[in-house]
Length: 428
Image (cartoon, rainbow, N blue to C red; front, side):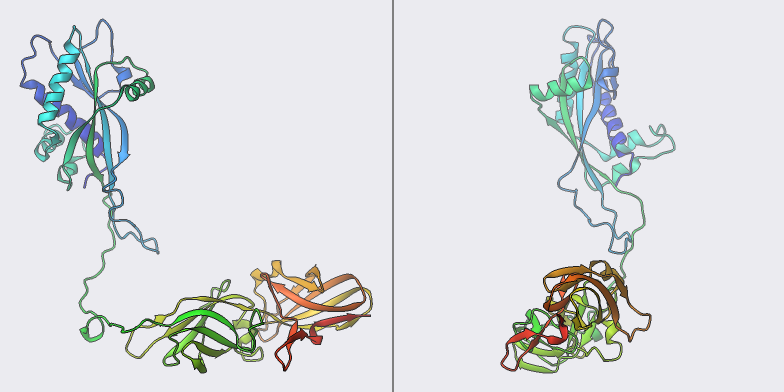
């Protein structure tokens, strides 16, 4: 691969290629000829116009064949794992200038014929131009371009009159006979050390090769409370029903990961298998040690993880699970008008959830007046709300956290739902 001087090195080599080709020609009828690499607007034209061939780099484009080679360059930790090359195609305009009639046309013809017969920059020529005794960049070496894997090929590009007109107008120079060429491909690569993995000495435990599985792993389609399909979410103390296919209790655990918590996923052990399509998993009770602090209301993802002894662990796909807060409301009776309502929330709220907490008092939404999550992790979060102008009647109360409401209902023996009187404030 070449370094950052590669573009200038190609231009220098093109100058030398044309200059060397002209040395073998008898140009006495035209006069001395100069080969340059200048912007066209800096070349003198008119009565004193010299005999000159000029290379002008007017555009650089990415090479489509190499542009994605060795990507990505860094891993997830930001460490460099490869040095992908910057692959470029260089677009040049070869322009001929002449002091006499037909001189410019003759020079352009000689140059085009020579490039037709020698449509590449050889490694030997690059070393001769860029190496000692007169390197063009002084102490900075561009010799590495001679060793890049791709040869530098010179291809004519036949531009139309509209393209040439736009090009010369942009250069603000007097038009002269010109021919466009593309040089491909220049590979520029940084000389930066990259991390190299160690060789593989063994494949699997005891070098017995990879493990082959005769069937697919578990697949989940839904997670819901086992007590009723009517409940939109689960609560601490509920039993979950995981529905899917290819489910088994052997070496299985259920991983629940909260969308806001940065702690590791909670792992639960399934207790029963109704069928290969339904698995039961109990959630911890709110009174269990650590449950208030280790769990939070909100959105979880549920997966089944199977880890047979001596074999790699397999995880199912993830399905959403909503965990609603369980609340204790006080007082449950109040007089019409303004009053303060206190709500205890289990499990405890995260600090990032405080801003979006709302109380739904009947059909009204009330913002929290205060939220207290004690340092003692065995205590619930306590919230106070100022309810204004409460009208007489029964008002079911719900706590909304991250858009998820507590369940203000209880399940009757016949499987129907009714409002829970312990979560209903009677205003009379």
